[in-house]
Image 1 (cartoon, one colour):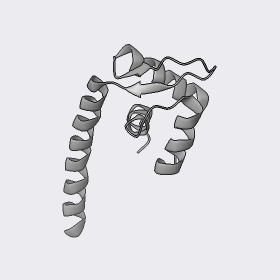
Image 2 (cartoon, rainbow, N blue to C red; image 1 turned 90 degrees about the vertical axis):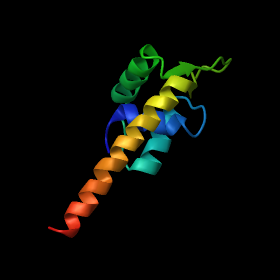
Image 3 (cartoon, rainbow, N blue to C red; image 1 turned 60 degrees about the vertical axis):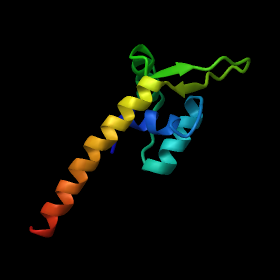
Length: 95
């Protein structure tokens, strides 16, 4: 799994985070280290799509939260991935 969109959404499903915290979280749970350009490019796209939103802060780091639309998209993608995993698992048993 290396899709930055899904990785960022999965990270934010656990709570609000700023960019560096997302990078650390993603590396922990997915074993993927997103570079700053990849991460912030994904953040920009996700915000434009309404799937994440900035959280007001007085800190210089900008945290983001998962929106209801983002939660719905992530849920749909997880369902699709689950189908793929189940199919691959079934087929590997017969290979």
